[in-house]
Length: 314
Ligand code: MG
Image 1: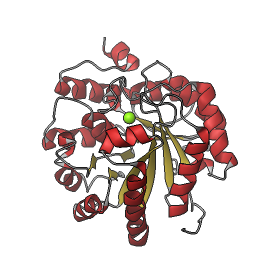
Image 2: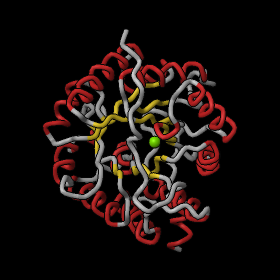
Image 3: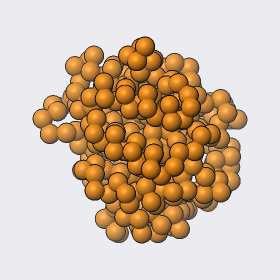
Image 4: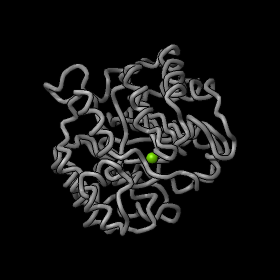
């Protein structure tokens, strides 16, 4: 049993001058977005996407995933993409499921990684074909190496708010897994509404349960999907609870490749529109972002799911 460590300084700090209410947006379109799209983009297009996102003001851009290419072929060129964006002045975390993925990510220059666990057994089996116990062992081994190497680690929890196979999810189990990941030394925890069923009341109660268990608010992010149209409302509930880091995907691309009922990620465009409307500076140029979303969805052969991107490009 490992010793429980305190989480260190917040791993995500708002841009200088952004004010104490500023939020940080964790842009996931190049990874979480593209991995769920049936159209595969080549490395040149992915690099262009990350460059465009950086140019419009994104500061954290999840660049790829070192999962097995036979399971997620959309991410097979992540090493090349990561290397090609290494000179940009942004953080480019990558997803790493196990030590093999970690070694590949590090060889490609990764300084910033994310590991993931599912709160439910069904999703763990469906997602990676591995039990939660095995996933925990793999993730813990990766985190131990990363901490020793001075690499920043985010932990993702999937199916925090509901599971298509198991139904309601136990808050106690969410708290237990969050505490487990924290005991490994992760810097940051992202709570995933993988199928998009969360409601604002549920966001409030889960954030409160985690804070009551000792997870510091600066270490919590929300990863919302808009399946039931509640993603922005859920972010608002999170803001009211003091959460300041939100995951989003340009144009709303992506979903979840293993959960059929999931539609898109919360669109960065919609998130920025709402936050700026609240007087919260995001550092993102909305017009430039909407142009990027329009370009990205054209490349994918689809329309943006973002209401804001749609309204502003009409
Ligand atoms: Mg997602």
